[in-house]
Image (cartoon, rainbow, N blue to C red):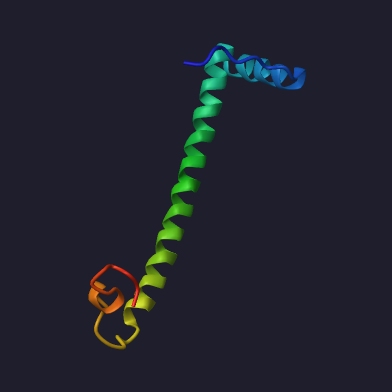
Length: 87
């Protein structure tokens, strides 16, 4: 587990202290609540993006599957000779 986190920007440290005071919680709890709330939002966004990508891929696959088959599938015998070299 990595070591403790240090906040080097004074404005951020002050905002954290203000948030903790307004909520009546410790600095750690204020940060934990804020980070967990934002993390939940980002995870929803990431899942939505992934879902859109899967849907797009499935549409492409459906289009490819709908194309006519031009002939029988090629086998290794069609492509390589008895020594395994390309024909």
